[in-house]
Length: 228
Image (tube, rainbow, N blue to C red; front, side):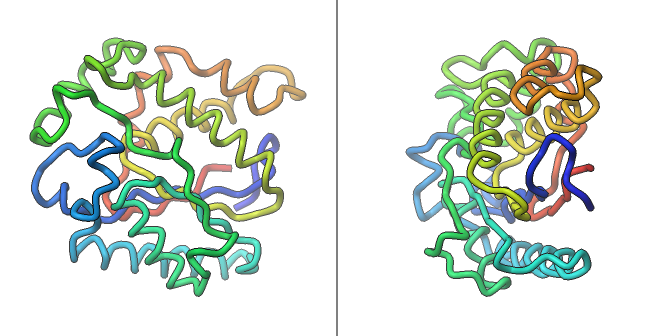
């Protein structure tokens, strides 16, 4: 895999392993709840994170990436921090070292107080709303457009800090779906070849693209290389 022309780094995304909220069928999307230790990975999720770490390591070896050129950027939620820590252990990277970085804007999409700690069955309502109007927020929560904006800013910041690195982004289902949707569209953007990252991403943050984010869904513990 080669870096895209408008990106300075190679990217992989990893959805956290199966978490305790996943096992309980609960929506846990607020920072207050998401960072609680009781909402970290379940036993199966630890195994998934281990397997993802091994797969990531294999893919890095296959393309000749040095471990010193790897960065792990992760959400502060317990389930993503736990996942990132397991992967770092597989790669033999010090989790408290400079190659592992927590980034608050990689946090879960906040679905609002009416959905917090409710059943996973409620996701269907949210995604139906997203498909109809991705700029409309669940009451008190974040819309697809809101999440796309903060993730675009996050990628721009990562791109400004690192160059020539292989970066693993450890986050959540909705944020990673939205991120992939935006980046895939930006890579295909037919604007001027001199368009920078921010310009390309801004151009594709439109309802017809954002409403399709479910097409990029990931399973728990699923590792995916960003398309060239």
